[in-house]
Length: 356
Ligand code: NDP
Ligand code: GDR
Figure 1 (cartoon, rainbow, N blue to C red):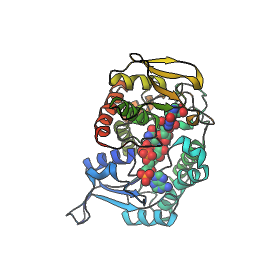
Figure 2: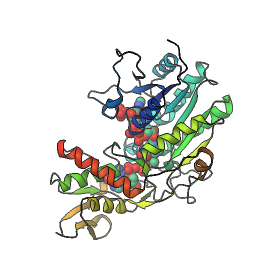
Figure 3: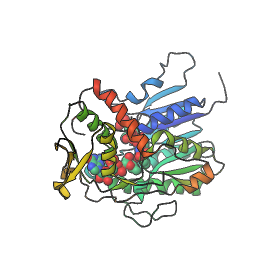
Figure 4: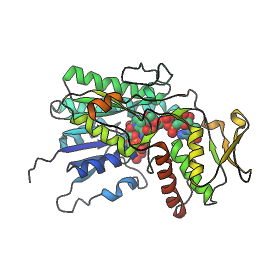
């Protein structure tokens, strides 16, 4: 059967953004192909609800094994799927982990992007296939100016950010050199109930739920003073799609334009279960005490501090407002409430994750 439904390929389809984006594109009638990694245990939990058995009639969603470090695999998948749009979301996306696996992070996040762009070029798809690159506010790193916009200089502060810097510029270069419709979304932090468990927001909301249900005593954290511009992931994937619907490719910041400390996120999350925190001590001796009982619920563990930190992120999303008509909707309070509520549900029936 031939039809004129658009075809999209998502790398990183099993991640937070990949799952929301696949859902969005399917709702718009796309045929969606996702790349997933081989794993010794199931890694498709976030997309189970949209999974379609390939034996079903007229399936719309397909998964392919692949890896950003395997060029021949990427060429084959792009050749087989002939996508109208590619969303490159796959990455070793944890900043702290990138200090421990810098070479792998450079390979997957930096060179991986080049491999995908080259696959498009080698297969003669530069005019057909539009390309979205998952760029990041981590590119801004050490504060140069605030709020950070598309014209703010970059100063990466981690192997992750340095790898993403290469990916950002190689995307710009393929746009300029080969006339590709290739765009960077410079996305500030976006979270949700399906955020990876080791990112700070989800680590906090899971711990709050577990402490409330008396399944955990304490939450150990690193730097409470860093500031982030946190939005809702479900809204940010709409911005990715909008970028690829524009006549001209370009680079856009997606952000809320507000910033909050990690400490404030912790307070808001505990407040959701009726617990007010009182802080005592300074630096690594700092503790978050339950105002009612005096019990220590939050402690600092130096292992969660990074060799170089990004102290302050606050985005200027005006270009996305004006050109894409994109705007964030969910407030931080509403996001925290949703995450805590969902983690209370999950935690009531699931085992506690160690090592988060
Ligand atoms: P996640 O960590 O949730 O998902 C990353 C995805 O990439 C997963 O599907 C993962 O597979 C896959 N992946 C990792 N390494 C490879 C590899 N070598 N080959 C193939 N697939 C791989 O990230 P998010 O969904 O939060 O983020 C999506 C993208 O956006 C990432 O590139 C991230 O760096 C970037 N970004 C994220 C922001 C955020 O706040 N969430 C902000 C700005 C940018 P598996 O499930 O098997 O681990
Ligand atoms: P970030 O997200 O590094 O901004 O990268 P993360 O949630 O990991 O850290 C945010 C801030 O919280 C501080 N922090 C802790 N972080 C973690 N993970 N664990 C802790 O225990 C902890 N204690 C304090 C961190 O030091 C940091 O300042 C995310 C990722 O999604 C990237 O892929 C993406 O590019 C950027 O957001 C934008």
